[in-house]
Image 1 (cartoon, rainbow, N blue to C red):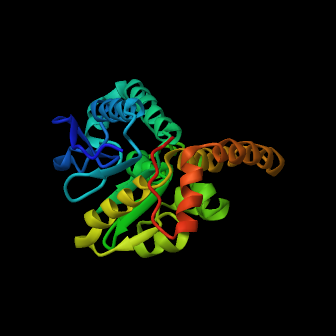
Image 2 (cartoon, rainbow, N blue to C red):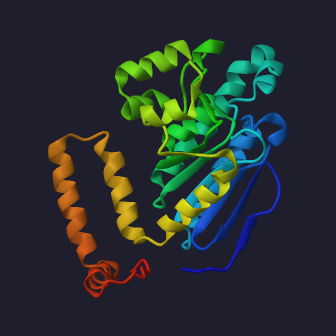
Image 3 (cartoon, one colour):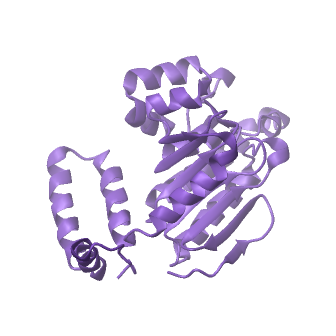
Length: 271
């Protein structure tokens, strides 16, 4: 695994760097609470696709610059479209859907760190699409779509129910409560809540921990979990058996077993 720091996107609406196997993708529109315009969504999708093509990416860490992770769709940009809004929303939704699907299909685990608001398809949707989520104590979560006469997007109509159950998902999407970090933890929306000042370091620590794992095993596990959401138990069992057998032939599997026997930390190479 390369330890060399590499800047992949140096400026613009998103920033992307790679170091120690961790691709750090930052939403970079802090003056608008990282509100999702068409331009930002396209830049986000393009950045995720760069990660797909980088062999050294073992983890993707997604964060937002400024006080908020992402306040959702850029309502000012939406309102400015007037009667042309449906066309604008179609473009925005297409890029958002592409971004969410690209995150789910990325072999590397996706970690999201949330400060301030995570709202709408852009913020709340990305949280639901992530593999692991860390939230600052002051973080707040809001679905928000029906509040502005819209419907959920970014796959939230599927992912949220999988995370919190159908009844609770229905309540969240229809009533639009603002969910604080502790309640989000209890609901299963996030994995960990940390003090605001500790968020960046906690997210980085988690990402680096995952980056030390066996990449093919992590990728296979992520794929099995996500495909299991659509398949029944019988299909999952056969796919699990095939995948475990395949992984057993890797050098990383042999290294993992040797490390346990020798009581040392494994050194995974992805082979």
